[in-house]
Length: 169
Figure 1 (cartoon, rainbow, N blue to C red):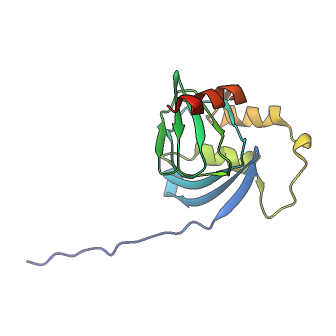
Figure 2 (cartoon, helix red, strand yellow; figure 1 turned 180 degrees about the vertical axis):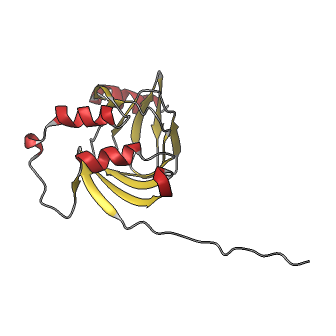
Figure 3 (spheres, rainbow, N blue to C red; figure 1 turned 120 degrees about the vertical axis):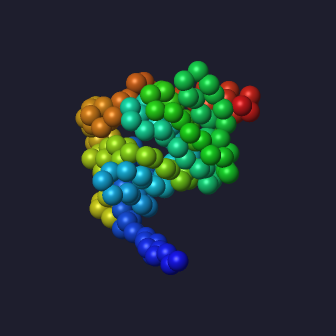
């Protein structure tokens, strides 16, 4: 009896990198038809994206470096290098990079809505970067809502981030 085995295949997504809301996001891989997305996100020290939610994807990442104070729904915790974090879709969350270095996250999403948002508001890193004061944050928030990750509130306050770190949970 003989069996035929199809050879394994691999596709490589050309890396594209954007600056978006102070973070650098590099697309590493993308499934066909808008499926699986793998991206690397780099948050500078002190970065804190606004409170937001993802309507259609679990916001999952493996933390490569940095230290993050996290809030997901009513839960708070600290993410350290080597931690895998999954923030369920539909649950509001915020985070703050409280470490003394940039935080690097290897993100995995099962839908491409977040990447679509980044592509629409981000500036390719190979282009001149604008002065942050000249950016239209209200328009960016509108795009966030249109692409399924509406902004619900301000970034995590520094005092809250420090309290989460102090509790160590």
